[in-house]
Image (tube, rainbow, N blue to C red):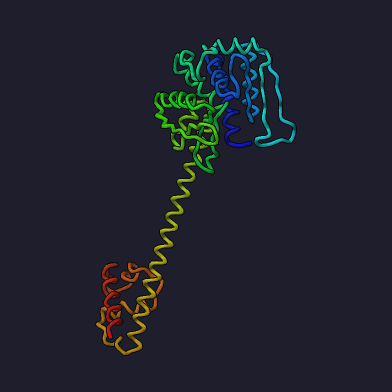
Length: 305
């Protein structure tokens, strides 16, 4: 089962006992249905928990009889779709009118009269996520979205999410494959939104995975930095030893001042040491910059004809 499916299961398991909140949750699911009008209701989903939740709310709140087409055993992915229809046109009309809609509506949008307070707003957003939402496994990335077939409806849902108190969810919109997508990519905002919808376990999973990634990335950065420093040291050491060898070969090595000769001898014998480690071996010890200064002198002398 995917992370998104686990999240929806967690939300479905926390059914509100207040009927007005159940009405709000179902309202969002109806708005994101394939068809929601006074003549027909058709709801489709690939998620079994969402399917069961939708049927339960319809039958519980409106005593609606549903016709269900379940996927064949063994089907997966987009082929694994649950389809729920309300065959009674009279029942469809009553449900449609219950939420304040009628056939004269130019386009189907959120009727804010159905959402009176913050609890109802939370229930609506939960229902919208169950019907059209998904969230990426935090191991792969950070992305939570609501897929909506109508542009204005997507804008209405985005506005409701932006209005959540104490969360400051900066949700964005885009068009993809004929649908309108309201999405969040910031990991902290995703955890806030998941917690808000009641998916606390999923939220903790995102936070835990991010913390682990941060530690892993920090360790990788340190390791890469150490490797780069070793490579830099090795490259500089090779250049210095090449200069020392050249001075020895053409007889100028013995002309070096004692302070340069001491540094040259240690560098030649210990090519793997850092400048600071070389400086600590001298008597008296000198600083890293002091060692570097002397070795640079040796390199300049070797380059002179």
